[in-house]
Image (cartoon, rainbow over all chains, first blue to last red; front, side, top):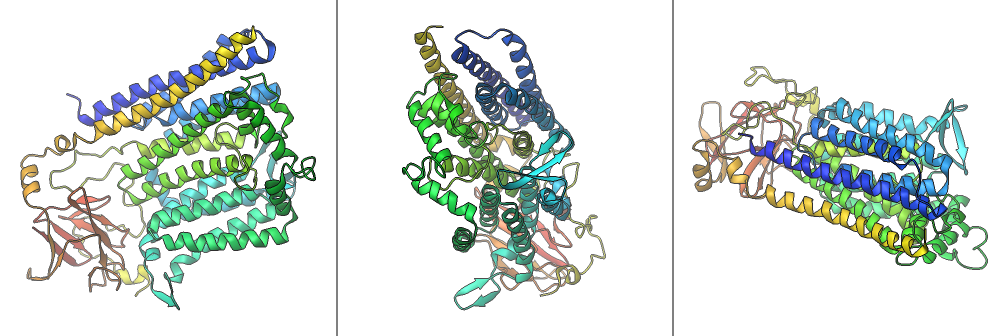
Length: 474
Length: 151
């Protein structure tokens, strides 16, 4: 008789299969509608497209059910549906970009599968805290290397490798989330305890706070040097959210927001680039700015306004008038052709992803997995907020991609890797024997004692090493 | 293709999108409901369940090398165990870490979780790698210190 867990995994696999087929159907519909809307005819050769897309989606689905048994069935269908809608919108804007995007989508799905194959247990990542942190910062630095880096639109955040260009800050984002999860899981107790007092402010041990501030400072300096405001805002938000989740102390949020306010004022006064963004945010539609600084934001608003509630229909609007319509402003393109209802449903899909991600965090019993899932979900949610908020003028516009939807290989690939990690965390980790009635859980086969210091594995080891040296004394 | 047909397709596509999200959310909610009741069924170990319900752990008692019981700590809220002054259960043992382990309640049961201590936490001499449930009579070893779980 199958155990409860097996039955549940099977039910989830069935659910995911149905939803994945639905997502593939949505992608096909979007594609057909775009072609019908632009040419007035049904597309020819749609069967080939549908076959390749469906094969890609189903490969992701099979990888999930085989390699991450019992994983949450909402992730793959929701993300692929978003990617499918994104592809259709990009195709509608520019056929050449769409061919690239199609390739990136398939590569993204392949990397999703590869991530699930390589990382059988997310706790493996917990072993390489500092390696991952350093690689993350190194990756961020790559565009500064002469000959390798390249500036596009005044933001130096691309690297060139032969014919390929890549935006390393995308993948650095995931690496830094892994680093933070691992680091904070080790130090959360120390960070949550105040040992020093300066007036009314209680501070944790500076030694435990140091590496965090260094990591954060380095990330911000690099981003300011590269003029990538969106990513820098994103990093800061992720950093704060994870610190808060790890320690449960809202004081960190308050201090962080004050720091952020100070940094914003400084950036406004010092960086001309930022002043332009603020002007475009506050006065996009004023006659003085609508033709220059505010042009992009204003065109985005016009596009969404002409879409109205139901939109013009895919392929029947003029989203091509918006600058960067397929990348940063893809949400405005969506708003024109799918209307308020269409953009709302897209936001609902992000909500589902974040909800399931946080649910996966709740379901874990290891602190690292909890923090990693929280961080990755926050990344998705915050990135969506930053770009959608910017386009709708809730906050100043900073260029980040809309996850899974925007045109862009780096972004698409990174988000599929991020998704694979969430899927991995949402799946129950297999344990060697059944849980003992005594309540102690046996270790899963791969790594559990992840710390080098925790090498005292044999129960009742007669000579444990004194903790004084490793811990550095009281 | 006539404009009316395109308009109809447009609305149909929006309806499909919402249907998709609705199905996704519904499956998650159904899954959530299915997940909650089987708890007792999943925990069917031979004699444990009945005993577990009647006798919840209430105290942690410090046991010295000669097996004598000394200080008792009552289980309330979340307890940090370690050498640091801020710990609720403060240990004087150089083989334990500043913040060695945490004892907390979830759904009426008590659990112990190791806080990546240098020398590890052992429940009945099995290394605690993720949160492990505590039952009366269990022995918890941190460094050289032994704590006994009492009802």
